Image (tube, rainbow, N blue to C red):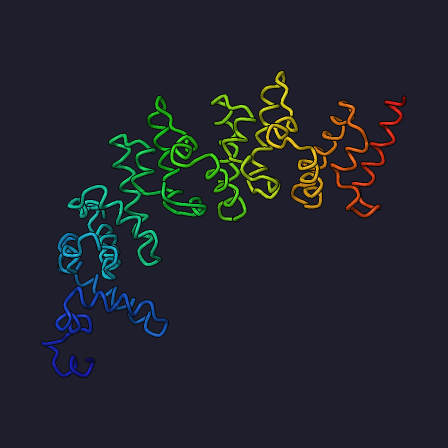
Length: 371
């Protein structure tokens, strides 16, 4: 090409011009985007993209016209599946810098799509690395439009299909954007405040929501948000007047049977009991009594507690409950022979904690209730 230009100074051409004459603007953009994904050709591809964009700017072509040149107007709801959409988005940004008086937005070109279609496309774009940044820009434009229209965060949540997410909800960049939208909404329309947690409780059961927050709290990327939302959930339950026994059932913990202490959301309930006690110091809440409502047989409950003391994550709460259970037995004058059976002492080595608990109980019982 350099040789051609040197011999034909009046007919000089460029690589981008030559490629365009053969493949068209849209074809070249597709080739460039494909080449950008390959390390060996990425540098050349980026240079060609710069030349292509500069060529359009020199010709003073509007972003809307470039949209058509790239045949994106024919993509329908598959817009963000077209590789050349990245080139168009970059051109729009560069065009705005050169022509600040003609500044436009991504969303202004997409007004032909109805709102739900646009949102569906946005959700899809968020899931693809090459179009995620474009989606973020459109999200920002949509946020401003929705705020102006006073769109409820609850409605936007469903529109973004966040209600169909599972344990990974808090890792979804759209969810993070939605929480920010909710914050902005509450600032602008403070008389109609809609907390994030109230929307979540509308679309997810207490059990599923608690499970999602526990899962998210184990991920460094979502740990802080999950912890905050867990606190908000406890406050929400309290504001609704929910007693710990009611929350136990709402979390469906009674359905776990003898696997109660294996449940990852048991600790959420324990935290609520503690929070409830703190906020209601005059109301007596006995955790053991709540468990006894669901585990009538002392032997079953005792064995659950003994096994839970062997696990680091449940050792403390199980040990405290086991102490409470033995005290209750003592108060109710349960004979050592029954306690021996409930604790399954005969099945355990003599040097275990269970033997010590039983021995202490037997000794104290004889002292307290000596004939």
